[in-house]
Image 1 (tube, one colour):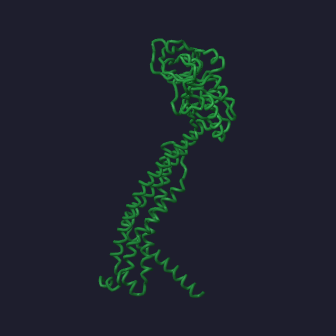
Image 2 (spheres, rainbow, N blue to C red):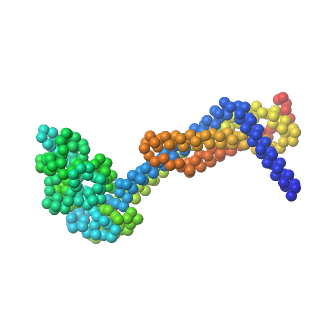
Image 3 (cartoon, one colour):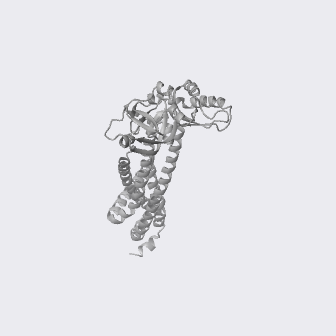
Length: 406
């Protein structure tokens, strides 16, 4: 037992002595040591900053998707030769399915708009129902949305966005004023709020300049059927069940023919986006890791130079009884310390840089502990791998050949 304790204490003393000598050697060659760790420092900084920034972007996108319609799904109808879309009764039946709170159709058109001497072409018009404004109360900045009377009578009323207000009603309150859409007189009943009320379908197709009752837009398009709807669900967790139930309803409606409809959920869009961001993060991390390899080569170069400069020192240590393993451990510790110093500085700089980037881009800043572990682990591995060869060379030096250089 005493021999074991003595051996253990001897090993600990040798380790602490090796660390002390490594620190002394690093501080004696400050400029060379700094240039050596610079590559590791830049590599770790890049890895952490890129991965953390991409993670922040991913979190912000996820939050945006949640606010824009978690618990909704978009249905695009192709139909068949018998029925090419959905009727009002079909939408009412879908709204009665389990966990479905309502349905909003999306009907679009490209129109000309005129008032007085001002006119514009290629303006986007979207048809909505009353439920749309129930689910998106912030969609209307001033005025009102649509009601059942507007839908049933195909009323010529509309809501316009702020750009339309500036274009056709500059300095005038647009509420109650008339606007000509495709030469048909419409009454403006509301002004749309900017960047609000976006649904899944609007994320895919984009927002419109003017909203009108969907029944009115169908009539303007000489159509009777709706080919795109957004289905609202009472709980996001019921999305899968609703998708199955809705799919069964549409299969029955279109006689189980293939390619008659497509259901897109927010979850599927988010999963695709997360997958793309993960691949981008891995790619950027891999590219940034190249600089760590370059830094490792710098460590190897410095350690080989150090072995050459300290040949006499190595010879003297061997002459007084130092074992090859002790010499090897000393140089490995020095290489490891160089690498870890660069790695730890890189962690601090990487976190600071990613915080700045996230702030500039307006995304969520979240410390990525995986990125920190990757950067530190990679720098430690680089120090050991690239320090092994010089350490091995030092341990294999013949003390006689080394002492001849005195």
